[in-house]
Image (cartoon, rainbow, N blue to C red):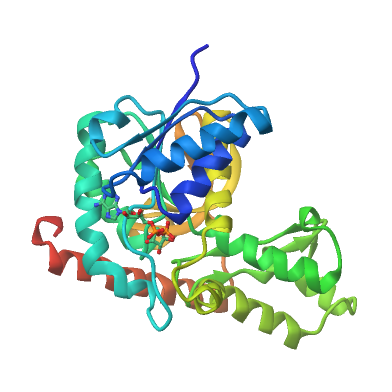
Length: 320
Ligand code: APR
């Protein structure tokens, strides 16, 4: 069986990390695409030269021409600019919307059958625009945010409880902004929901609230530390989990920005919800019930995404 082809559009910090992980996990051959000349070629060659040491087989190609992504099975998009200290994800909208137009055109021409994962921020609006520009069916394009936000929450919880990260599950829904919705009721340690763990004395409500807030601001915390860009290891790992579920038909249940057409009362928007990813792409959208308080938080987050989508329509009237 021929190896799968994985195209990475954007060969910056996240793109390079993705390329390395694809090799280490032997998910397929890699095409790194970027507008910067030399960067995708250089990173591809560097990683290919690590393969004999680590013992994996994967071909690496760097390119500045969209023809190189032809026939890709999976495409992960990180093209654009990341934020710097003092910027919100929303500040990136003007530049990155133009980038999505170019990327969408490339996908439409060369890889219309790919499963596409968008990482570029502001995520929920950029994946929405990328779907419009590429014309991909709604089940073949998703945004990566919920896996990352949940992973951040899981990390904080595992540290607090001094247990393995593997036994902590967490559930973060809504838009990928500071009003995202960590659902404590659906987050557990080995199946025990967080509110029960508070009752059992594992932590206090106050500490739990602090971890929820730290999760919401998790991206900003890294930006303030790095100063020159934003997080890349955890975002790359999160997108790889999504790609792997598609390529291996694992049917994992993962929180992702998916196209909603009435689910959760939302129409024509991408918002973070639990979905099943398998060989057909988005195979199911899981609709959980909310308490009144959770619903209010979710609605607030959706309203923020709507604001970003409206801003995209104003910048580019062709999207309206
Ligand atoms: N087409 C292709 N690549 C592009 C384009 C374009 N039109 N415009 C910019 N790029 C490339 C840049 O040359 C750079 O190599 O995108 C890459 C982005 O890499 P980084 O600046 O290192 O950013 P990174 O940390 O990888 O984040 C990428 O993901 O999490 C989001 O907010 C983040 O939007 C940002 C994106």
